[in-house]
Length: 160
Image (cartoon, rainbow, N blue to C red):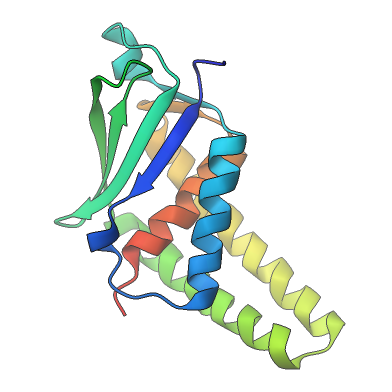
């Protein structure tokens, strides 16, 4: 098994204050896809001699995303904390466009759905690049992994 990957991901259920079926579906798909295919190298943990595959636990505390990391042996390999202030606008934009997308699926034509979906993907991609920049000297990762992590960040960021 590749040691430079996430083998397990958990979300702090207490952090998720609000759910709806669409968001729950996004969460489940992102978590499954993340574990199935990802690239993840936590640099500080590796410098300290830890080896993956990695278990990740995501939570939000006092305006920060906390990524708790455990190594392949189940040992605590530290955590990465990211301030969420820079993600407020991208998260808000992403959920606004997702809401439009979910409404379009129920009522719009195929062309309208495609247009909204393209906009949704563009917002998601832009936010993913921001997350990759934020993680740059902390974690080596790829775009698809960061994209799924951003989806999970959004799920944790919901405040009803």
